Length: 220
Image (cartoon, rainbow, N blue to C red; front, side, top):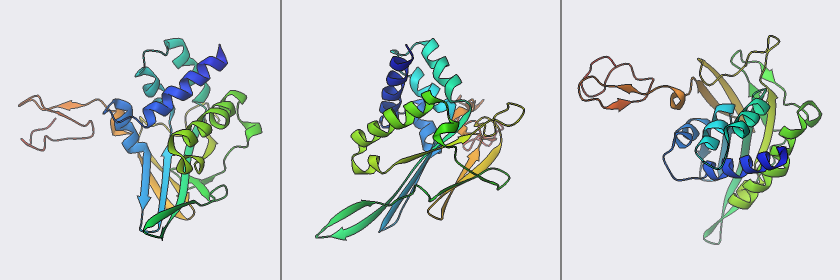
């Protein structure tokens, strides 16, 4: 049923998010999870496109094709951003870790540099609100402790008037997220979703955005 599907999805997604294996979802995470740290501050932003949810679920045999399709259709209308801001204060030879409020400190600017407002819960499908508030947020807290409880989710519309996706990780584009005035830039398409290229000399594989083989110089 729907509730079982959502719970299973949220659990497997969270496990994929923190897995140490170099799976496709792990490679994708390197592009959609940005982090910046100084001596006294840590900020992070995760953009979670529909493709990531699908890939993370497909890496687990416990999820059926119908369940994956249900989740992908459910989330495809939205751009989902998770962000956190933390102060790191030296104290008695340790670092005191404090959550900084970001509820009003996150701004989303699309490829036209236009500021986009986050949707209110009343504007979001009930099942999506359940996934984020009742499952993802508690799981982040359980898996990451204080850092996880400080993560806030922001949900934006991702369909234009014609029903096309506004942000598509397979197509060229860019957008930026500001977290308490600090900017995080995302570039598209995501390399992790591009087909790998193969060198004709030794069949070595390279990321899909490579034009020439860095070893032999031939065109890929």
